Amino acid sequence: MGNPIVIDPPVDPSRQCTSCELLGWPTGTTPKHVRIVFTGVKACDGITKIPNGFPITLNHASWDPCAWEGFIDYEGHTWRVVTHIHMGQVGLDRWDQGFPYYFQSWGLVCESGPHQNTLSCGIGRGYEGHAYVLGIPNATVQLLAKDYNLQPDPRGLYHITPCADPAECLVRLVGQDSPGSVEIRYRP
Image 1: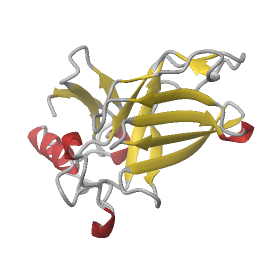
Image 2: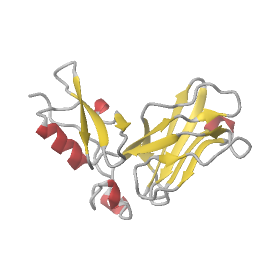
Image 3: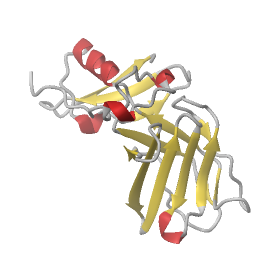
């Protein structure tokens, strides 16, 4: 049936985020990585390519047990993404231009989203759009894989599509031993 499920290990027990168990992270399972997907973010300054529509990996921050930060190079620019889930903050800025924000949200404390962009042209460099924090709990991944008899490739665990019903998630699990994949709709 393939290799065992390989998933992100939790952070060191002394660095657990205990204020946001609503995301499905029971005590002791705060992930080392979360992913954020931006959708529909637009630029005010002529940039045509903003990192929309794919998961961006963030690493657990050293300064706050409930924060994650990540960097990506996309279309010739270096972008920084940050989330403080216990404050409901999600941000996207251009690291290579001294932090001008394209996305900023301060709401939905301890929830995965949708986080609404609060910026407008003149205040930031971006406007519109949403963000989703994708930290699928390890227990959920293991349960879904077991129920569907899959040994998922971890690269496929984070392709989540927001559903019309915000209480539902749609996750794609990709089997290691087959070229196919399956999308599973579930309620966290």
